[in-house]
Amino acid sequence: MKFKSPTIFFFLLSFSAAVSSTADRCAAEFRPDRRNLRSDQITVLINGYYESRIPLLQSIASTYAASPFVRAVLVLWGNPSTPRETLTQLARNLTAGPISLIRQSSNSLNARFLPRRSIETGAVLICDDDVEIDTKSLEFAFRIWGRNPERLVGFFVRSHDIDLSKREWIYTVHPDKYSIVLTKLMILKTEYLFEYSCGGGEAMADMRRVVDRARNCEDILMNFVVADMSNAGPILVAAQRIRDWGDPRNDDGHERLGLTEVGLSNRKGQHRKRRGRCITEFHRLLGRMPLRYSYGKFVNSVGEQGLCRKGGKLVPCDQNI
Image 1 (cartoon, one colour):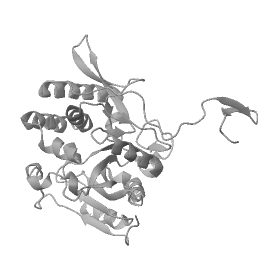
Image 2 (cartoon, helix red, strand yellow; image 1 turned 180 degrees about the horizontal axis):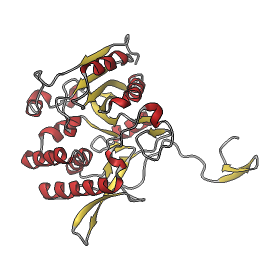
Image 3 (cartoon, one colour; image 1 turned 90 degrees about the horizontal axis):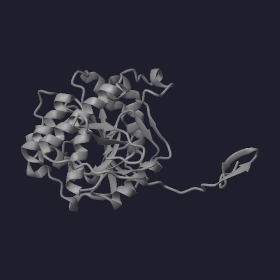
Image 4 (cartoon, one colour; image 1 turned 45 degrees about the vertical axis):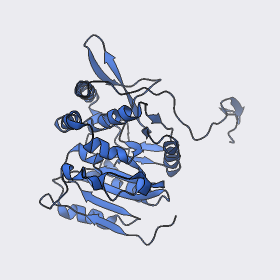
């Protein structure tokens, strides 16, 4: 597919404007019909909030938009205090392909998953504004999702577990299994946006309120929704090259790119405790634990595992030096 001449789709919605509420988004016309959705392309939803990250956001959005299997890129701006002039300038700079800049009607993290009539694809990529990935790896993940459309597919995973002494759930990392895909990079079918925002009755509404109170855990709740509907765990995909600029272990580039804000996940101890409390509360409200463990990950190619000495170095036997 070749894009037509570069076009900017710019929607700067002020909070006083007539913006669709969550209730409006749950009207019948927002429920996607898979028969009308494209299966050969994906829609990218980038969450933006920090003004200092705008240069990196512009680069990431442009890279996605240039990919032939990306139908559209929606930049969802969730910071209500950002000046209109700043977003106007950002929109002018987003010139590569079909990019839309949408100012969210609230700063709720639940807004990341609002159903949108403009989405024309069967799959969406939910991602952050500080994670870069090579196009081949993303395309590979999209193909894996196409074979497993009921499940979540992603590159960053975590796990739930139980603390028997305290009789509560915890949020952790296991070396050999996982049950949660993070929204740093998450592929899911478009219908799940509607299920997250509109399904589940009062229990789901209560769980969305937990997300708003905690200002956290929207990704965990989406994993609850998908696992409950699919009765299956997520899928982890290996990437050839992926860069998380927001990871505190980075020792370069933060000042250059203006990545000075400390994200929630950087306060590891408290962050994990808060997310563990979210899991416990979601379990209580839902009345069951839907999260399922998965094991292993999909890789794009399998290279030689044996090592040989070449040029005085011990390297994989199929590697040329």
